[in-house]
Length: 337
Image (cartoon, rainbow, N blue to C red; front, side, top):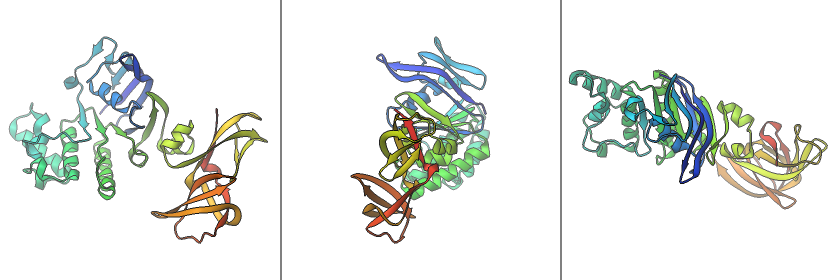
């Protein structure tokens, strides 16, 4: 396996930059998740790494080899990159076994079939080797696609929204199974998603993108606990926001003060408070507007001074019509405008 690195990459379409000075690294044998909304540049990064498009500036390296630079684009088939697409892209006229064997055409037939069966066994589908894609469930198709991508021993694998469209239970199961397979095979992986939970669950490193730029690249815990911008914080889970000015080292919201240690007195700032960082107890500081079940928590809407925020409180705790509010510092941030 090899690391995958983009250095100062730019890619534009009709003069509009889809990627603007992007530098990221997928470490060898680790998972780099690319998280961002549609149009943030995630899919463009994948196409550049795969060799499906050239770069307009910068370079793409696989290991120490420059595979893309201005005037040089190594063909896709020479890069040894595996891909799992959002729709899996299995060949409908081939069985599961033949799909996995497809990229092993340089091997003798017997060895090709043996390796395909071995990879299907690795993803728990050896017994479905003779089934056609239309006979497989969505989850089974995903696992066949993963086996097909890994069977030729690629230098890296690209996963493009591989769990979209699956129900939540199957999504979690496949995510865990895929992560286990990637870890076992020590596969360098770039994982594209717009789902924060998927990104946080699978990534060793996380790159958050918006408008063709990387807002932050860091380990998932660091990005969650120390977001570089309001947009990074919002990308990683439900937040509440408030705009105010720094007074005595803090911005004072209707629900409490948030420290602003790096901002000067009187500076205008955006406050971000994660929903789980709002602690509620009996009192009279805020009014409870609504309580809705949210798995192990309740989603509670609270109001004070005309401002409504959302809090995640332990499910089934007794909430009166009014509550006092405490903001946990670990989930509260300030950003200069």
